[in-house]
Figure 1 (spheres, helix red, strand yellow):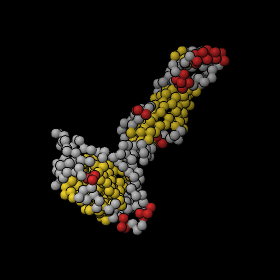
Figure 2: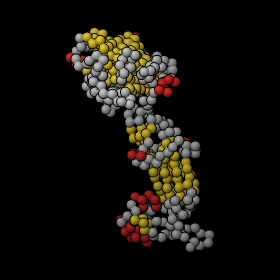
Figure 3: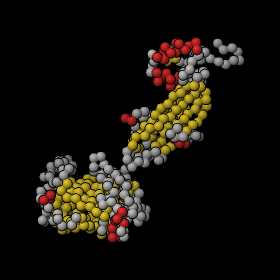
Figure 4: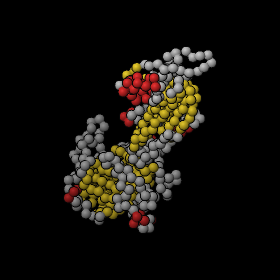
Length: 409
């Protein structure tokens, strides 16, 4: 018992066979009076907990939970492991829940998070009291991390919040981690383009739209035509989603990357510098094909194709020698590689265009969707690329039609 007007506490032993880590974390008993030393050593070695109690046998306990939100606070996750981590593409919001899980008052309760620059004393916690700390609380505004996840490559981020408090003498402490998986943001965009180039003796023109308002039914994701005029690969027209293309040809997927447009690329500028789209198309008007194209049959074989474009402002003819400092293959982005490879484009280079056409198949159609289910996505039979010599391409923001009809891939 305490003497009148005096304050103090005494020790009692309660043996809970827990992990040694829990002993150290929850009780804070790193040093003990000499008269309990041997007993403490025995139980510490065997993973027992020596709990410090108050005069009347009350327990002291402190707890912290760090929660993370990737939807601006609509929901929070207790992501203690990578497997539980939510996926974020830009901002991350944290919330801390600090509690007195014991039976006696805790004083000098201090919350720290070195990664976020937080070190705040929140005072006293009564038995069973829980305090929720958010970005709106003084000293905790850094719980809002709007730029936490803005990666060019996926990453996994973790940080730890800590809490300490004083019970009956020893300092109690607890900590909790919060994981988040960072991924590059998905950008919605559309493109309209038309141009002409030469690659290794092949002269060609191209044009169409992917996800644009003019891409109406029957193919709401757009249409594309590539016209090989002359050169080592002969002559042909390859098209997908056009009025004259057969059913089942279409643009299936659109991927926008590299946020922010180059000048002069619209005002406001484009939402992205690069766009990739892919789908199924067919050949027509084949003449003098190369050996690689011998297997293509007009209007019968269906071919997977992939287009990559970079909207960097101007065709090559207007760049006045800038090509000397531009990589031959453009930025190097390959949205359909495994895994996808996204690289930044150089705004000092001209617009860029690449198309790949793959080995054809006699199509097998899904009876419900009408889509071709047996396309070959491995064997390239035709590929040309280069900086745009004539014409232009424009990556645009999504408009009403696009937002209603297209996923923002």
